[in-house]
Figure 1 (cartoon, rainbow, N blue to C red):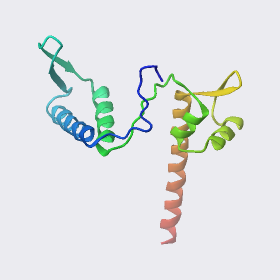
Figure 2: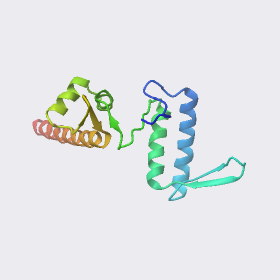
Figure 3: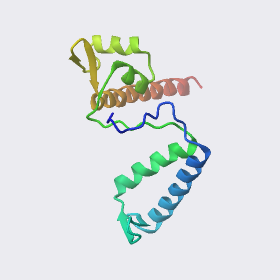
Figure 4: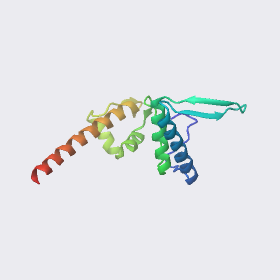
Length: 151
């Protein structure tokens, strides 16, 4: 994380932050319905009107972020180029640190050594997470098919 980033792991959005996030999300959703690309209008530092056009990708990302904040979820943004500690990676996967280390030792997740410490590239962690989720979905579908055959 960058030096100026506020750690959000222990910061849950206040009721006011949730309300503002929901209001902004509604504004963006209304803008998206009327335009291919939402436009945000505001006053700049010199009190002059300014406008920002959001690309569809940025609009979707912002809407998703606001949805989580509006629900009261704590949110952490992780750049894909970020090197993570084993504890940070374990927290993102919602597994224990010893389990994560076993994945590293089995070669299921790429990592590098920085001195005596293991570091995981966030991009590799997210790729592992996508593959893991795909395997889980496939297994769940197979179980659902077996269950349907028994009925």
